[in-house]
Length: 315
Ligand code: ADP
Image (cartoon, rainbow, N blue to C red):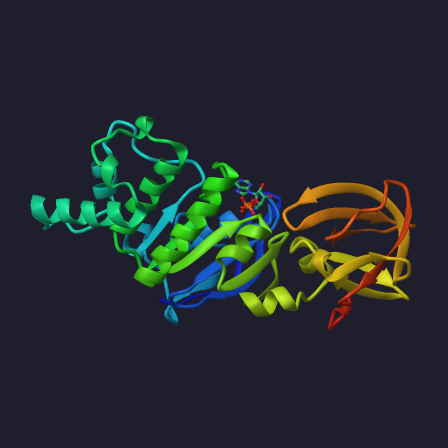
């Protein structure tokens, strides 16, 4: 199912949480809403789920306006906190999501088993939530959301309470589940690495407004403005009066280059070292493979890519 959001606006007292936000989530794809804390991501999800009403704007499911109550929308949501029912077993939690009341016990057991298998908690069906690790609890929350066979699955920073390794593992799981089931997903995160890992389609939000939207691979290569490039982790600097961006791995430290400054800080990274070079009014990060000059030494940065914004908005 394709989701379209048109000019969605929501105000809380004096805060404009969403400001004429327009975007799409293509059918059978993972769309990531990416933006800093407070940019309106969760508000967008709550409006799409029908948990709150917009002040103005339209939500369309497959091009049809939706005005149904939340339970009739065919939408499931997974939250950041593991919102399982503590007194119920894993199986009961999963089956809570099953909408149809006309199923036999055997049919319900089969559904619970199938979905538990899909998310990898088969051996925990009789356990209570407090006997599970954080990762397992979030798998069960995902299972419960999937059990209702939603048309649209909304995920509100579901992995942010998990450790980094587990988070990576669950990103793979989510990708696999999406590929197997073909569900349309809208996933909220403030973490660009998560957006890069998961998204087929990206919507970048900032202060309630959509800064940019597009197919993930295209958007990553074509940030529209300084905010989007910066939020995707790219260097944004002014060179010869022009605002340019480049990625940390697309630059080298050398004797000469477009930017010359001092080595300010060094971090270990997987593929070398991340070096922060600071100049007069700017600082950039370079991913360096070879030896790294001492802190405080003078270096230049040679750019292997130098991309200008199509419509340069002044720094
Ligand atoms: P995000 O999910 O991107 O962190 P939110 O959608 O939660 O952002 O919030 C957007 C803005 O709306 C924030 O400034 C937040 O403080 C405000 N906001 C969200 N929900 C409420 C609410 N129920 N009452 C008042 N302000 C709210």
